[in-house]
Length: 320
Ligand code: SF4
Image 1 (cartoon, rainbow, N blue to C red):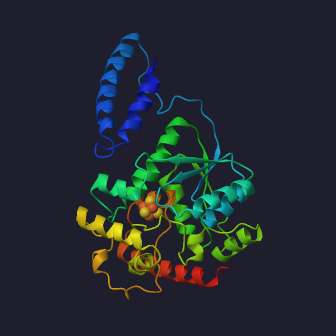
Image 2: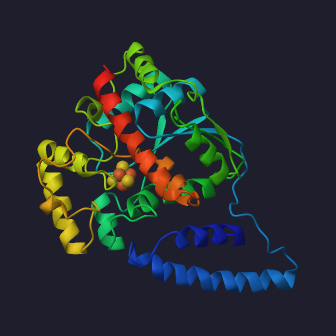
Image 3: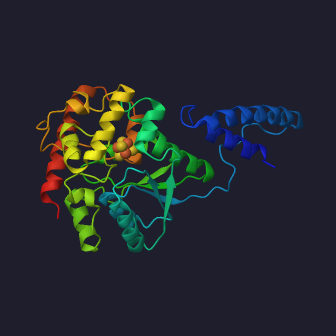
């Protein structure tokens, strides 16, 4: 028998799902909503307080690393020595990611908890949303990553400390994270280290970084990340032609662009070469999506795009 509190949490969890994602969720949502109304009335008569917390489990204040399976995230996790390490998996990760996870588990001497959305892949998510990406982000980040984190938070209430792998180039993002999630504490263990130093630490520990870096990508995002630029997509066409073909077909079926310049099947092979721009994903970008746009948005966007290009080129050229 569910308690009122458990019922409330179940209802809040279901609210995170959209009708397009899981049709069963809609029916369950309606049923639970009715139960909630029934119990609320019953409890009101008994004088039970209605302002119950969002979760009913015991509160624990944990140090949690939201591990993204990238190099910076690995070094930050190792430095922080957290109580819990959580990785949110997506079908589109390069298979070498799982080798990296296993190596990191040994290095951390701790099991990595894996969460995964029932939607599974970027393609499923985009089709379910009839949308690929826009100025406020991408449905894959929100539905495959943010939602899983929120579900975990409902099951694990507490004033946790989250560990982030921001380096010395990302101090602004660290400040943004603190403002976007004031209900948690935040720890940035590698904030004074450069990207090259961080890669060096991992190499020195004898851990081979994920293969995507060695292939020339600036991070270990999904293969065929919807946030990539023209150079990124021309490289994906060379390295993963099947992924390129599937994303091209998806664009046409949904009728939405991945690139702002053109459809993928119109992309000329020479465009954007040597400019592999693809922002880091993970929990970072969903937090950035939640931030209000800065006043000089145009100027900042141009500046950050320039920085991303420089960062990508620098990292690809100088890392082992
Ligand atoms: S890495 Fe790219 S494709 Fe994968 S979830 Fe993040 S934004 Fe979407």
